[in-house]
Image: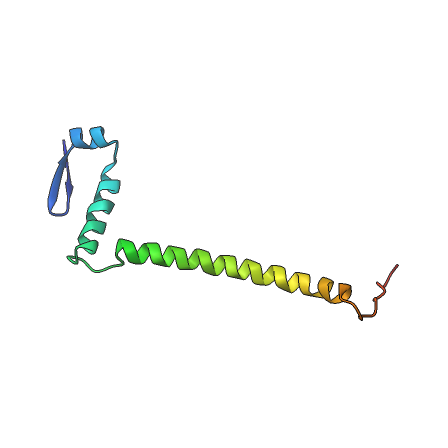
Length: 89
């Protein structure tokens, strides 16, 4: 049995040797076509950069949230500030 992939044929034995499934092979072939400029889409480098920027953005958002939560506490601890009483105590 042979699985058809755009512009290429891969035998079942090759799939067994590489322990890959036809969709995985197809995705790799499509990505290679994009990287080589034969097809439209994000290149591997662009995908990596987008993933990196997304991670960086998420980390910066977490840091901003931590700073926002910590600011009132630091304001209370600074010298010269008047201690506040908590209501309900």
